[in-house]
Length: 355
Ligand code: PMP
Image 1 (tube, rainbow, N blue to C red):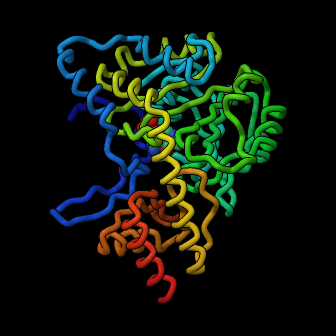
Image 2 (image 1 turned 45 degrees about the vertical axis):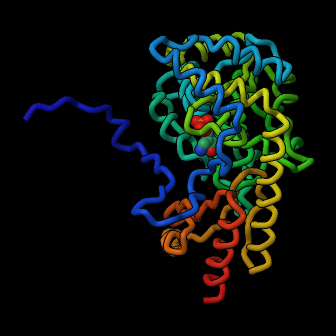
Image 3 (image 1 turned 135 degrees about the vertical axis):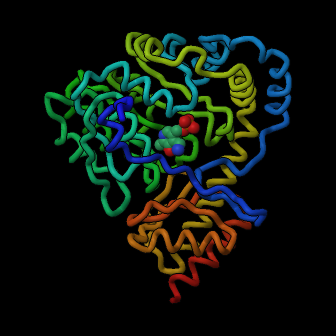
């Protein structure tokens, strides 16, 4: 039978595994997707409702008002901001904008599971550099992995799924070591949760280094994961290239309005993020008191390096009513959510260590 041939690269593509969802009517806390546990703010709900009447029209392709609001919020030129359908879409647009077939992209591993997928789809070759046992990126090894074929380096900070943030001094050393024509993508999806005083300041680094691009999102701290809005911050020439490589009308009208309303609600957002950070501390302290070795987390999740027990732990936790995200053979990532969910989780982890 003659069939449509598929791209060879697809055969090797690792699947993106979404976090488990509650099903079958059983009540479960969903700590499997790094989502924000809080419902949308009333002001954001109102913006979403207001936007509904216009959905027969295409959205503003350049998300003009939102782009201007983000630029003002970050104090960067408006030409430097590119919005997209979640920061994951922007990851694809950045790679599409700079990678030729066969170019190399240095990335930490284990890290965000979309990286190898998007690198492969861009026709590039991923060069994974192992993350240390403390869950920290090894920026020295990443710098050493650069070759003349390297076009991009992905730096996930805080690192999903292990938790630590890259420190300012390590990042400064990396940027000194890496050639100026290599694009260094700082993926700051969780930046609002960072409290480590030694953590790198992405915006300051962006101001100093023309080859640095930042990725940020409204999905995590702002709680708009379901609406798919993220953005990149890049020098105008790179930003224009990322825009050129973007999906037209990539951010929906309702997404634009909700993100604008969210930016306007800084105080409420900070209060919620502070509560999640406090809950993270409670989860980390509780786990460590039970004897678990848990890497530092500067994000809204923690990592248990359970190795071959990852899947069985996730199953056990699900039976107890807490959905977590296993990475088979490696570990489980547990998002920080409701206090009741932390309590239940700590009951499960206590039983597992006692066994
Ligand atoms: N980067 C990292 C490190 C992430 O963990 C995620 C979400 N899992 C994203 C980017 C993408 O988020 P979004 O597309 O919702 O903005």
